Length: 421
Image (cartoon, rainbow, N blue to C red; front, side, top):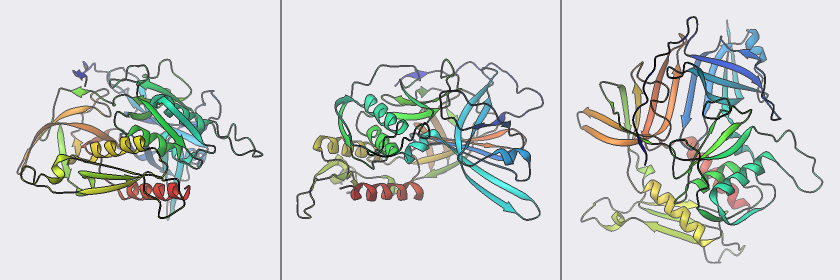
């Protein structure tokens, strides 16, 4: 993994009369033309941005429901862009763009409305394959790009109306190295077939999580990393992974103000069984499956943890080598018991380019039973933006915490895949 030093911090103070963050409202775009600014939402309060590795980002905020700006926010038809002032470049950097997808109005003596926006990566979870898509001996980058193309160009069965421009999403796939520099295709060749009703977002995520897969995210087209600025966001595919190794430590009592450490056996398995599709309606037909395990599954004399089994469904997969890749990918992810740390940074610690998603950073925590001095990977970043315009930044390092929503989503995907048999 590439090792980098921290950038030199050039001080560009926040301009007078404004906070560090600002929020702009835009109409949804259904062409390659950049959308205009409808309003700057200076009245937004309770703002929070949550980002996660290989997952969609969300932005929540509240407004006075009786304000003219609130009346301009239209669910499903408007985007919000969250801009953060960069001390390094002296410019506003767009950290998020997403569709306003949820709202909640609360009325008593006042009228408060809470809005939630999700980035365009989340929209891939609402796009499905409508006609079977198949690739043989094809680079995984090109398969992911083909899946994205299916999401942007929805073609139904014969006789159905055209869904253009309604199916347009401002996304374009591009390939990147861990440090964010451009690269050629990965060289990892795959065979994949996706039947109708396959969720495109999950298909890309499954492809990413095999051995020698990739990491991915979506970055706003106005971001300086997208050069020149584009009217569409980039679906970035990082190979072999996203992020570099940083050398400056984050230490509890210094740059870290609060620590929450979680260890969950649900996140651990040293034996994985992945069940595929045997392409038979006969309930007595032999199963198609792959099993992978670590040496500590039955080596209690050396590593006394015993056997911890987990099973996954891959009901869209009928090829044995693909099942093996998925089983190895799951084992690679779950086969090491890695704690999850939520670290609240002290105010003023974080600045633009201090670290990015996927970076590996030295973490030092000395307190009671915790004697932590190790390198852990950033898998989540959250910004709580105060009404005074400042912020509290927290990061999740180690393993992404398991949530009920993720477990339910995985179950629903399994059920949908089984229904397509």
